[in-house]
Amino acid sequence: MIELTINGMKREYPYGTTWLSVAQEFQQDYEDDILLVQVDGKLQELHKKVKECSALSFITGRDSAGRLTYRRSVKFLMLKAFYEVAGGVHVRKLTVDFSIGNGFFVKPEIDFPLTEEFLGRVKEKMEEYVAQRVPIMKRSIHTDEAVELFHKHGMFDKERLFHYRRVSNMNIYSIGGFEDYFYGYMVPNTEYLKYFDLVKYQDGFVLVFPGKDPKVVEPFIPRDKLFSVQKDTSDWGRRLDLADVGGLNDRISQGKANEMILIEEALMEKKIGEIAGEIASRKAAKLVMIAGPSSSGKTTFSHRLSIQLMALGLKPHPIAVDNYFVNRVDSPRDENGEYDYESLKCIDVEQFNQDMSRLLAGERVELPTYNFITGEREYKGDYLTLGPGEILVIEGIHCLNDALSYSLPKENKFKIYISALTALNIDEHNRVPTTDGRLIRRMVRDARTRGASARDTIHRWDSVRRGEEKNIFPYQEDADAMFNSALVYELAVLKQYAEPLLFGIPRDCPEYIEAKRLLKFLDYFLGVSSEDVPKNSIVREFIGGSCFRV
Image (cartoon, rainbow, N blue to C red; front, side, top):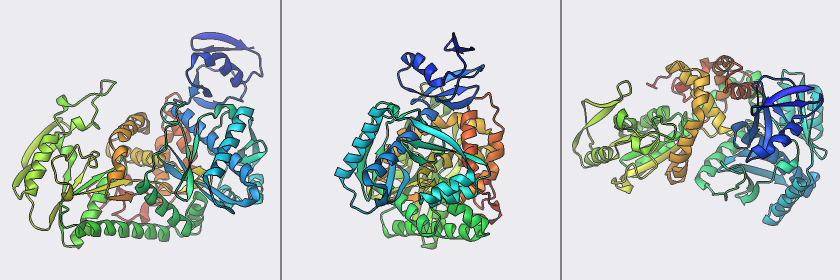
């Protein structure tokens, strides 16, 4: 017998008992389905057998690891149902392309028109499998066998990905005989996958997931501007055979990393130039307002945009909204009693509007500087007058929200949304999450500029994301222009900086699970030296060596 302490209660179980049996015994104590178990700091799937441990906890759909597991499992169920309804011979490829809103955009390459009626049948088939409680099986096979298996199924991106895998074995999942490889854990069977939707959108469809509440699937809200930017990036990657990690690794192993970096940076410079041209064409535009989530590269983008504006004969002046912070003692606090620096109430909105209005009127204004050490706003004789051909480049997380600039004329504002919208996939069914790219960027920068540990960055990340969802994402479609700051090669460069930081997180820390997941993720990439990264690259904002003050 194995003795365990669960939720403060001692229990004994025969050898061979699965965690699923234990979870079912305690399910009544949880509002949401138990999806995984955490054993001595390590995640395990419920089909695993019980073992002695010193620490044990259950993971539900309200936990980060549980949400990822649920989404991954629903995605697998969708693939199974789609191929079943379509007939495998009629599906050339089914790519889970990128996240959009509360779901994944899926791009099918099929021999018939994609219709609402067809998607309805796929959804019905998924619901049928849910009712049947089909087991999600897992088996370990040799990497060489996996390469042969996916070559046989025409999944050539997976075949290419596995060519660079150094492990000898890998796990393959199956639902009713349909096999695939997935990066991460699965639920035990399809009964757990009750909440989802399929919505036809653009030239594909969106697989919609629950939000914060694991039992509520909120209606999909189209984000056409964001979709257009992501699709452009995705299409560009396909044209250059850089849509997935296997293609990226091919370029690196062939000695073409420098060429790839130069092409990417040239494309980015071209897009920045196009945005500058659009601003210059709007004669009334005097306030260029830039916002985006954490680690989007806003500072470097602002510098590069300013250079492009100067090349067009304009004279930009940078304005950081952070300099309009109220004094720290007057800052609002969040539900945990900590200062909520991402709240609009942290900004002296009245003073900001007064100063910007005076500048637009041609008056001389003394601009503030915020002292982050003392937590107070200071004035040091920094005066500015806005003359002909001069514009303000304003950066801050609230810049897309008209509540920040409520008194400023709309025709004078040009809003830009910037984010690192990763279009690179691990393979056609496994995405590189945009938030992972930003987290790794921030981790590397925090360690370099603030001496912060990877553990600290991971610990704060959920709070950062909550602030983004509240203060930035709701306003992104209001932007006049969107800019994607993600570079297809960047994770191959960031890898060498991030891995030592992640290895430094002890096993007994709550952040260890996330660190282990990110290390496994980075293991897919071949490394690239940072020597070939240009000094003005957005990547330099995170790894250092930028020609700008960032």
